[in-house]
Image (tube, rainbow, N blue to C red; front, side, top):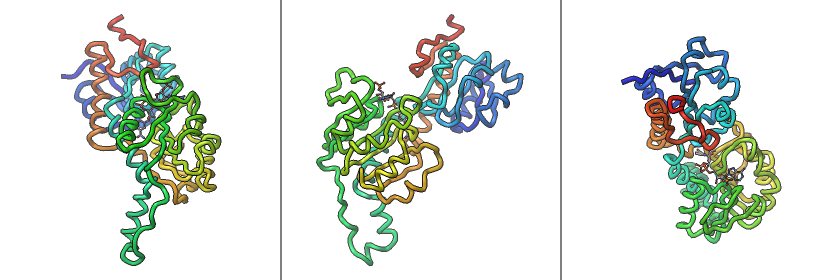
Length: 327
Ligand code: NDP
């Protein structure tokens, strides 16, 4: 049974979300998150938006163009493209899809780390090129996980799940956030540079946005040092990619494994040319199982909001927003 509410889907969205929104609401669509694509009917009727909050910027102009907007349900845990602070100031709820992807992304992080340190993709390419038979064994890898000290930049939901796995692998763990996590025993460093200084394996899983823009820079790579491995499963915007390419080229650090890039889907040729970088096309949460769970949570947030005035997973910036029906 459909709720008497109009939901707008601007741009691409997971097909399962689209189907479920269509089943549960009156759905309208436009090709991009652009105010000039909105019809007068949309401006009058739209009370909810479902969007990919890491893809196209959704800011003040779009929010202001929809005077009856109550909620933006975003697909993905990172919502750096949505101006959530502005939404919050206008009484518009924003939700994301945390938790349901945590374990998947942590699995990917560990895979990326192993592939980077033990050169598994290059070893497979060696086999597939027929070189094992012709030239003998793949060379021993100069790097190992044995004895490595891991530093987690962003000890949140995913950071914790990565730490749990790293502990099982026998690595030591330290971390940096803006604030220490209460009751967490791992050593805390009040700055990213101090963390990088004290470890040789830096795993970044912080959100994007202005506060973290290019925060992983030349200074951090220098602190990480010549045995250093840098893994990024958070956001590409947090890294100075030019400085990273330089650090990998010059041996300032040893290797990097990256799932995210500053200007996706473009990956700088400088990175592609480097043998000591393992590069993945943003597949952190990209299994059918986990993407379906994320797609469901987008729609469940909308249904919960419009049927009982409660968002299931509000983002911090809009946690104070109350449904109009609730007063
Ligand atoms: P959480 O909010 O649970 O964790 C984020 C952590 O980062 C917190 O511990 C927070 O601590 C810390 N942090 C935030 N801002 C800063 C800052 N400026 N300086 C230092 N630390 C900071 O989020 P999740 O763990 O669920 O997700 C983390 C991010 O991972 C997402 O925002 C997303 O960008 C990315 N991601 C990538 C995926 C992929 O496919 N590669 C998939 C899913 C997520 P504090 O607030 O104390 O600073």
